[in-house]
Amino acid sequence: MNKLIGIYFVVLFFLIGNLNAQVDQSPEVGVIEHLGATIPLDLEFLNEKSEKVTLRQLITKPTILSFVYFDCPGLCSPLLEGVGTVIKKSDLILGKDYQVITISFNFRDTPEKAKIKKDRFTDKYSKGKGDGWIFLTTDSTTIFKITDATGFKTKAVGLDFVHPSAIIAVSPSGMITRYLYGVSFLPIDFKMAIIEANKEQPRTSIQKIMMICYSYDPENRRFALDVTKITGSIIVFFILVFIVVFLIKPKKKNKN
Image (tube, rainbow, N blue to C red):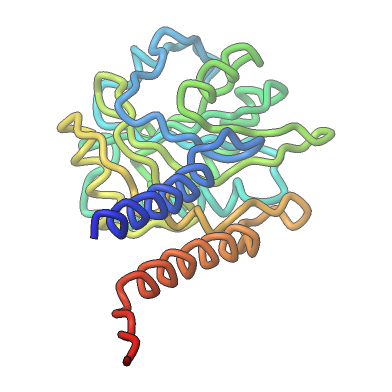
């Protein structure tokens, strides 16, 4: 029995380690969650009015951070559409209960481009509440510092970028409390992320586990099933099942 328990835990730890390695390894493009960490609030940006601001000045309430670049041909517009849609569906009030800050990770983007992008999305999704959705640009050094602090990893490919699609909930003190993945968001998940941020309560998203089976396809600029990850996890699972069943199966006694 002790031998059985020992083997079971060895295989179980191997399985857990395999999954953790797939989620927590430092990807070239992706998200490394920094739950509970505080973002650098003194970083300086330019808002869509070309005014110099710091995150410390801006983040005075629960805040949803989104990272995009304004000429993105792929995920960025669907992400902002998803944010706008959930803003419209949410029973929380943008600008009062929470705010959204969209930061460009392309140092070539300008406040003028930020204003065009802001006007497009606030007119469509949050008319009259534009002050609650802020668009920022900055230099490459500051971009690296804020994306590194939030675990948002991108890769430049020519003038474009390969990047993940996620939004990040931040508390009024600047603590990272939750990540939501994809380009569409359930109102209940969005609301809970804001409530948790207000309470300074970091929460792991179940979507992080789902990301085990997905990887970013840079050619098609979308997330796709990662067959290698799925196959590896299934093989390890069945090895575990085989070992447990084989060892606990009662042995037949030899008849004399």
